[in-house]
Amino acid sequence: MKLIFLDIDGTLTRPGENTPPESALKAIRAAQEKGNKVFLCTGRNPAMLAPLLKYGFDGYIGCGGGYVKLGDRLLYDCPMTAEQRDTALNTLHRNGVFCTIESEGGSWGDENLEAFLSSQGEGNSEIERWRKALASNLGIRPMQEYDGSPVYKVVVMCTDSKMLDEAKAALEDEFNFVMQEVKEHSCINGELINRKFDKGKGVRLIAAELGVDIEDTIGFGDSMNDLEMIEAVGCGVCMENGAEMLKAKADMVCPAVGEDGLAQGFAKLGLV
Image 1: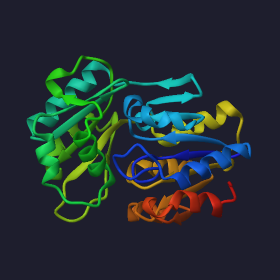
Image 2: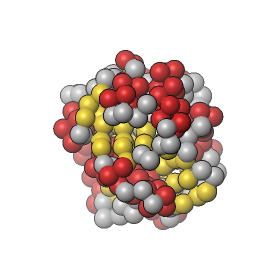
Image 3: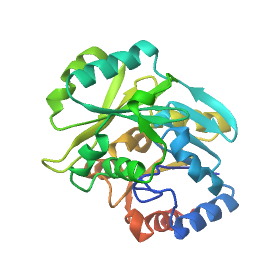
């Protein structure tokens, strides 16, 4: 039995979308019919990944590793403390950084975030995800409506890396600032991920729970928040549309998400 872990945006679907190509769904079903298990492994929170659960995944790693489910069973749950959340938002906002925060049941974004995103360049799956999420109203509400529920991560967007310096000084011991590979002069964006977890630790947790050797795990991703997953699995696969730095770390590169890449990757690995 193989355990297969799939990032969503830029890997399973085009960024910001919730409908995988039919070729990918057929490949996933075929792999499961052969006795393998397939999991989502995403930075999305449970609310944002929920539309994909109807396709019959065996569980998921959400919030970049902070919320892990095997079937209906919760294996791991690690939100920020209120103090960590407030320190992050206060230092980031003081320096003009646009933020969104994500809880289990919702996401909240700063005022004018949509206008900020609309001015940025193309070619970054995380930027595209948020642009489309805002455009299609996938539950991202104004920050002033935040209900105080536990936050798992903070997504940051700014025009100069120096704008993150104060937050890094306050939080870098506890949080990894995972920044995306972007084109020159484009928006700087990334997310604050608690050092207690990452996608790779989520992979190892599920593998251990199922008694599966880590060498029998496979991960598909496209952006730098997939790095720990790619490093943890027995076989790491990067999409052709992915970050060059991730391709260099991967064991294999498969065609882009819009070119039936996932199905071709499954076939090349003998999963279908």
